[in-house]
Every structure is written in C-alpha cells, then in structure tokens.
Length: 281
Image (cartoon, rainbow, N blue to C red; front, side, top):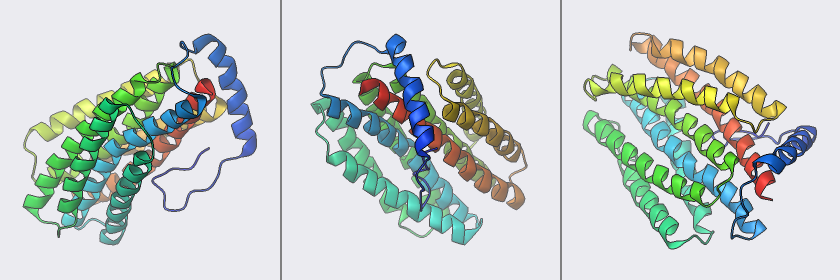
C-alpha cells in the first residue's frame, strides 16, 4: 500500500502490489474510460495528483484545528503539538507543490483562495490556545475547507473518468474523520452550540454511505479492497469513541482513533490516485 502523507516517515509499497493494481485497472479502463481529455499525458498524470493534494487541504484544515483544540483541552499535549505542527507544515508544502503547476484561470483563482484562507488559519494556529482563538480557528478552518472543496471539484471536472470521482470521495473521508474529531472537541469544550452534534450525526452518516459507495465502485483491486475493509474496521472503533461522553478518556480515544482512520483513508485515496493515473495514462 502507498504510505500515508499524514505520517512523518512514509515507507514505499510493494512492487508486486503495484503491478497487480496496474494490470487490474488497465483492464477496467477498457470499459470505464471516458472520452480522451484535451490534455497531454503528463498533464493528466499531474492532474490525478493535484486532485488528491487539493482534496487533502480539506482534511488538513480540520486536523490542524482538532489538534489545536486538543492542546486547549490538554489532551496528550506533546502528541497534539506534533500533529498540529505537522498539519501546518503539510499545508504550506502542499500549496508550494501546487504552485509549480500551470492551471486554467478558474482553477488558479480557486487555488489562490485556498492559499489565502490557509494563511489566515495558520496565523490563528500560531497563537497560544485560548477559548476565543479556538472557536475562531474552527470557523476559519471551515472556510478553508469550503475553498479547498471548490478547487477539488473544479479539478475533478478536468478529469471526467470514474476514478477521479473516487479520488475525491475517498479524500473527503479523510476530512470527515477529522471534522468529527474536531467537533467532539468543541462539544467537550462547551463551544459550537447545538449545531455541533447535528453536524456530527450528518458527517457520520455521510462517512458510512461513502464507504458503501466506494465498496460498490467498479474500479477495485486487492489493495483497494483491503484498505476498504481496514477502513470499515477502524470506523467501528472511531464511532464507538465518538459515542462516549466528552470526558478526558473520550477525548483521548477520539484523538487516537481519528488518527488511525485518517491514515487508512489517506492510503485508500492514494490507491485511487494511482488508479486515475493508470486510466489517464
């Protein structure tokens, strides 16, 4: 499996797994490939990566605030600080990578909005954790999420192949895992009002529906199926943690299980990115 981009030290996947995945996806491409794009092969492969990376900003916005809230609530402070700083670093490096590509004007405009919202969020996260800043950062993270989602949708439209939608859907699962954990922290802190629990119920239902959608998708490989099974198993643990009362034990369980689920969903998104590259290439 490809390693998670949310991990500090990734390790390469097995060559045999890559060969098996490539052969299966090329067979599926004969049936599922949409009309050829007006882009060069190199540009199309870069597009597959861009969809994944732009979608990742959605999760990073929520992961950063989740960790910031954990610091405010004194949940595993050392680990929470590590997660926060890693998320901030990945946002900056991700924006730099996307800047190296040439995009159509509308996509470039949307990515500029992502950059602006990310800068505003980073300025808040650089401050010492406090109640007002925590709530303001959460709202700003939601704005960054919205801008990143628009950019991701625009990029997906440039690659009208089934696996482009799967990259987007799997990538959104990363975000949902982190927003659920973020909202659990807000509830524990007595912030966010009654809408927090409603958002959590909606996100939980969406996550489970998307898992079912991905499982039923026609593009699949043994590695994808394995990641989906692992994701389902990790969801059970995460969901059980979310149902605990928002006390310190619950906060610690949610912090741990949300990170594990994020890693699995990131690996799954990477597998779908590889699928899109195989189809487009």
